[in-house]
Length: 349
Image (cartoon, rainbow, N blue to C red):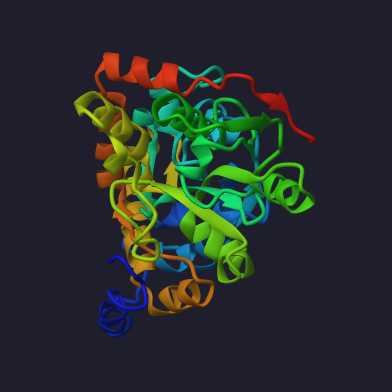
């Protein structure tokens, strides 16, 4: 299911003929004509927001009762604000779900400040993509490869010191000797992108490659943004010459650390509900999520927006999250030390 336009199109044709009815549920009355709030843990206009709006358009068609999904942005703390909300403040009746930075389990395992949730207790509904994140620089930065970044300082924009926009460059500095200077304090990814255009910073330490293609296609087409390294469990076919972080490990300890850093990429576009929602509603959500990603119109719309679909069911996402939390403490501690942001400065926002 790597590419929605190639791998999934045949499945979609069959399902459109035989499986287009909404998912059955033991509790259809709950969803009937109900407005479901879909919290987005980033500012409007970015990749997570784009996927959320796509889901909001199609998800209700595949849940008995055909609920209406309404997105609401809740940026802050690299996504932790939204997850804290659905974990401890949102009603757990199924009326609120969320999508947010896939690194939340990673942040929890690292013991980042501000984490007030246990990601393994969330009701995971599924994930739409498992593609790579990239550390990228602007074409005028004077750096075109990771080796170049070991010899020339590059200003990298980030939200907070604990987010992947800051921690990925910090890990590269600590483990591989690059010279990224991290500027924190930007509200979200769009603010960092604007800062890159203005010349305030020269790169961004983390963004899914699919997001660059979906939200800044001209930057990709005109090679204005240059990926230096891929963070994930496998390379993106678009980037055969860009090194994978896992392949840069020089020993077993580094490989375990890089796997820990990259494992959350397998759930790049996660959707979750609060803990302990009624089991029938969780089943309806998970079944509906699977039917949605097989919907021919959904696939066509994703392809039109150049949004990759590489989906996972909620049960599989739950397993991946549990494995992240179960990472050996010594590997977590070494990664935590490497991802510490030294000498970060404040951003413009």
